[in-house]
Image 1 (cartoon, rainbow, N blue to C red):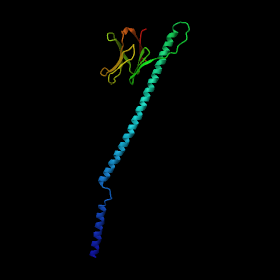
Image 2 (cartoon, rainbow, N blue to C red; image 1 turned 90 degrees about the vertical axis):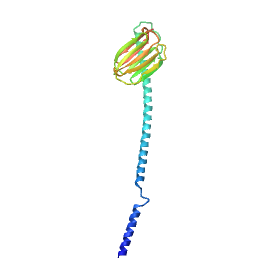
Image 3 (cartoon, one colour; image 1 turned 45 degrees about the vertical axis):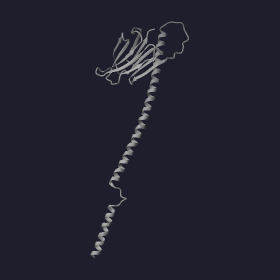
Image 4 (cartoon, one colour; image 1 turned 180 degrees about the vertical axis):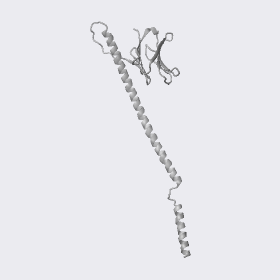
Length: 212
């Protein structure tokens, strides 16, 4: 009877040891490594999806900017055409065949999301978002510069660009964070008295034209 009991006990111990040392049962280290691989794959997939989304967003932004430039140019074209038509109505003259007016866009700058500067024919237009109110307008005769200060505590690097035009040389846009305003400066090649300005504060539009 004792021999049978010992045999049963031995068999039980063997089965228990075999169960604990089963080489096909996954170890804790294996499970940890597997979890790490799954997480790494998930992160890589998220990264790829984010990169794809960023690329699409950038392409859409570029298309929107281009569409906005075209729309702004057309709006300015219509505005200039309307002004010239109004001037013609104030002068009595013999009827003439009206020529088709095609404006020549010489320069088109979108210097900031809220500041655009255009040169169409001999007219330079500064268009600023109306929420940035015009605080001050000044001229520097010796330096041949026209200055325009707009209210706004904004931060950006100073922007300088040359203008391809016989009537205008360059533009500069800089910020004065401490005083809470930013400045637009237009350099001209001739005496300041040879230029005339028109300011539409309500719509944030300033036009500069050389006198004829």
